[in-house]
Image (cartoon, rainbow, N blue to C red; front, side, top):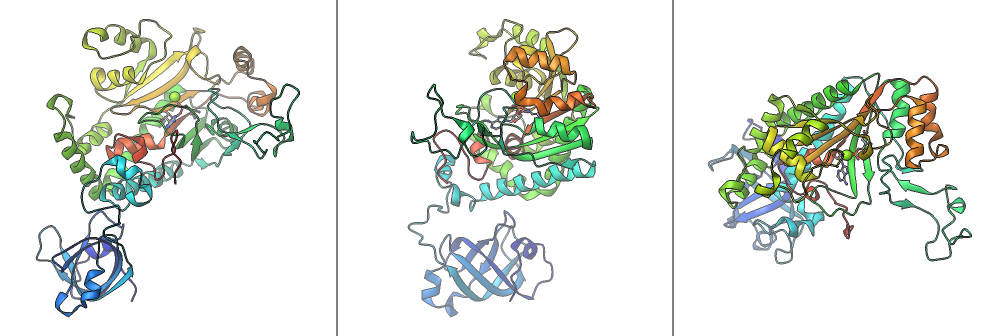
Length: 478
Ligand code: 4AD
Ligand code: MG
């Protein structure tokens, strides 16, 4: 008999029909009640076993984690919290699970423990919910751009350029690194002899390639894996993360901000509507967690209130210069808000500053723009003041930077000048410069760190908990 997904069974009002469900046992109470989960929903279906007519041997094998196939009659449930249950007539154990050895016990495990069991943690309520929300969010990303006529571009994962100029790349090589690789006279590895005939890296951003496509197709977006070898062991950084990078010809910085805000609101709204049960579960999980915190540190809003707040309010647009004034006047020392005080225009903002602006000062998402040229990438459009660039970062409560973007420098001479100053070889980026040589135009784009968005929507606090198998320093177990 064809099995029916648990989510469909639970929404089914046609009781008294015979059904089959397949899934994994979450709990088995009183030798009678199986809570069965198949991943289609956070909710389990209760399967009532006729223990008097079931072999002792079979009952023993209904253990937490076991895969089972259950056939029986769908009935209105007497139990509270569920509409229907299955009165079991036949149960088949598909895969045993030794209850003593199964790492995921029917109790609350620490997130640290679950990280070490990333292959099994997805069988818990929290991770099931997070991964379904993640999936719906990615669908919403595609739906948003596709509805607006953007072209989805797959930019290369192996690249020969450093888009961000931050030198945080993982090298890709086919050369033996045991010392036998061909060497240059100075002893360095001779990448000309390597597979691609030059040194290559895992991409840190698809932007530069994306720009070339925007200058032909008008509006494009990428959505793919991105790699950064930055050694920041924080709850916001991954060595491998997914980035969404739209790029639009003829958009200036203001239009770029409008697009980013509209896009973020769309995907959050879509997910709030589609993932009601999962978000409710994550919200209650969070409330539970908040209870263990001192009153002063507790969040004023619940998860759904936070999400709705973002949907209902305009992002505050503030220039870097205004932000620095606010930070300077916030007397950080007295309240010990910052370890690092900003007293100079031109300094880069640390995440504690970003969070102060968003969480304490404006109390809403903030778009910071017109940053000092010195602290931003080479490709950003220089303003007429000669000091600032048309950059924008979007800062979110609890997250900090969620988006980084800019209007691009479309003037060939200014761009080359900028590259020279930063020691970026023209020959390295000849193809990129061609977009400015032939039919250059104003254009803008941004990158949204997908995991940071998932963090925000799920209310989780560590980025390692919103990607299936996190890659961080000293951690690539799976
Ligand atoms: O600010 P970033 O470095 O910008 C770029 O890469 C541009 N090329 C984007 C563009 O304009 N097309 O990165 C963009 C976003 C950040 O705002 C952050 O959300 C995320 O990517 N991000 C990371 N997420 C997780 N782990 C990391 N190590 C991240 N580094 C950046
Ligand atoms: Mg950035």
